[in-house]
Length: 361
Image (cartoon, rainbow, N blue to C red):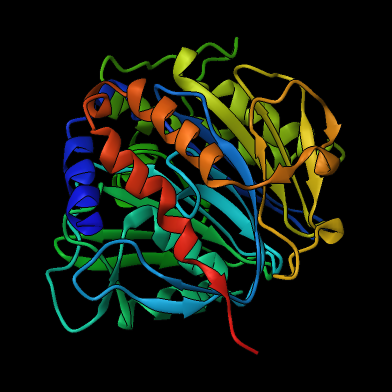
């Protein structure tokens, strides 16, 4: 029954208005820095920051043959549609995964592989792997459900390897290493973004005015891609700028008005994640080296919009089913195409994490 309800929610989400699709991600890399930036653009601002623990036994919530695993790594994730369903995150090994909407996504047809939902796929990767190579290889064993929401991913690991992962015409398509000159991804396919940049190049005149601005959302995503690439080129010419500040300046430059809800900067080399939101513009950070990821202690959560700044590790509280339920009720009621999801469905979704237990010794 949970699977059926979850699939209904996924199908409903396919009717999201195109105007909302404006997320942006990028990696800023040099000899001393490995920075991953991300804007989350959506209609709802509520969410949790979650400390996920290692050595937990899990079975995917959806799919005909749901994948089963034990988490190897702890992680920090940003979740809007409940625990285990992150929009992005980083694990203690330095792997970062983030998703963005992509209309042309077509997931593989059913086959012998185990299955998982598209958001929990992110948690699965963070739980299990430390490298881009491992994430790509996992496609041989696990596939995203056919009816899942259409998204694509930017992934980066602690070696500085970055990859774009898309599912087109029923197959995984990925770009890694030399095929990703600039690791940037918005809401158009990676190939169309590169082609757009090649055609339009520098989008600014000598007064730094944008000389091309598209009317449609799809074109905006292409423009945003080009704007980020140009900013990354500027960074290479200004090696003395603070990389965290510079990453946030990029995210601010490509904000999509009031739809830009969350902005995150992952400092992979230094094991820190910085973030601010539209409701709390003070920058907060978490030092992963100070986080207890052992399963001996409970999963911890924090309101992403908490009105504090600086180190917020001591602001986390213990996760509860009730907190998960309240988040889901709030998010669904404020998402136009999910507002009619039944209380019974929300209850079942909110209680799903109760199935997750510490693995046996």
